[in-house]
Length: 177
Length: 137
Image 1 (tube, each protein chain N blue to C red):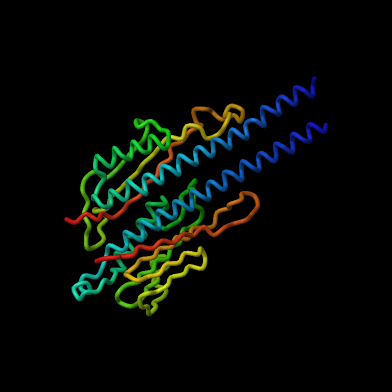
Image 2: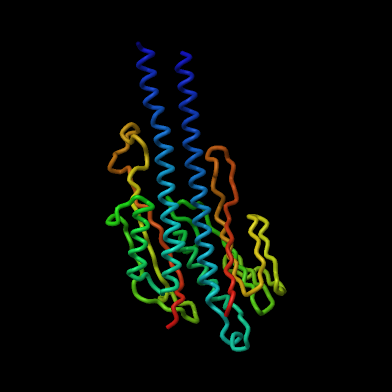
């Protein structure tokens, strides 16, 4: 009887280790994927600028085109639906939100949440961007696009109901133009 | 004798767990390597070149094959192979598309033990997306 109990305990422990291992691997992969996608989204958005301002020697981002580039990059990179919801059987759950900061020579920072302007700040270089939720910090000294992707939290330790913020932020700075 | 048979059966059952952990780690490592090769090298080079050049594709295939342990013939690629240009306005027709897939041959250890058909114990892991081109017209 004692053998049976012991073996049952070992089986349960092994199952827990397997589930934990898979969960941690999944979390790491998700985090890594978000890093690449946010990086590519910020690169893409930084390509589009206001030509009229550029003729005056200022690099001012074209927010409309930049937002198109970001949303398309996120949708394609994470393989989610057009309305930013996860398709069935997808790794992602619920809806994916995103935030974009355009900081440029116009001395303003425009903040968009899911493509909608939510804030406009007066900024001068250098500007320190700090994301308190995931610790991302960057010193902005040139025109910069910052993209943050915020998917719904995924359970890192399956079965323990511990959900972790998995958001990732990346910035793309134009060093010379 | 009864205890011995039971002990043996449970030992076999318990052996599956470490094997499963090893398979999971291996699968994870393959996927991580694939993403690193595609995003860090292939995609960034295609962004500069404006498309996936034959040289870039060959390099991608050989690196994926050696680092992910997959035969080159089994790598599924769907890439933009004609030049796309940087535009002043956002144009979806001038984006570079990429889709790279590798087969993951074993997902669950001892599939027959859990009633899983070995033929279904595999999947194709694909990463895909779009990027803007840096190539000037």
